[in-house]
Amino acid sequence: MHRILFLVALLCAAAVAQPIPPTPPTGTYCQPVALRDFAVVIGYQAVVQAAPGCKKPALIRKESRINHFSEPPILVPVGRLQRIWLLTHRLSYTMDGQTWRPLAVR
Image 1: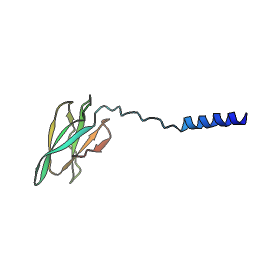
Image 2: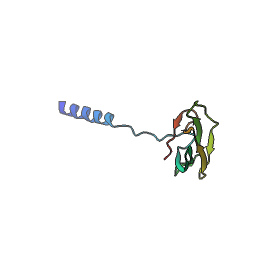
Image 3: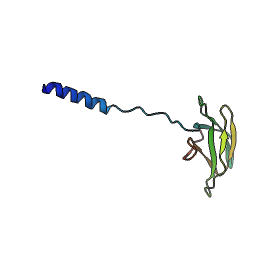
Image 4: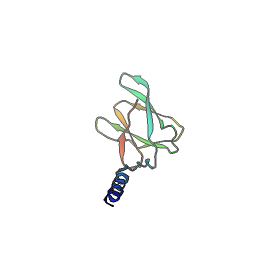
């Protein structure tokens, strides 16, 4: 009897210890992809698009590295490219319209 209770307790503990698979983000916007296209001495041009396979647009914005001023957000439709000059700026993106994250330009 004690063996059966021990095995049942062991199986229950193993079932509880299984990690719950994370749910994919269900934001309003898609994560963008940014690539460096054309570089000059004082900056470069980035090409931004929604990540491959996305069915939602991407929302990005330019932020000044000097005074941290943010320009109005730019909506990048699915399947379209957006070219942006970055001289003293950096890019950030949001998936929910509230939380902004830095966007790395490759």
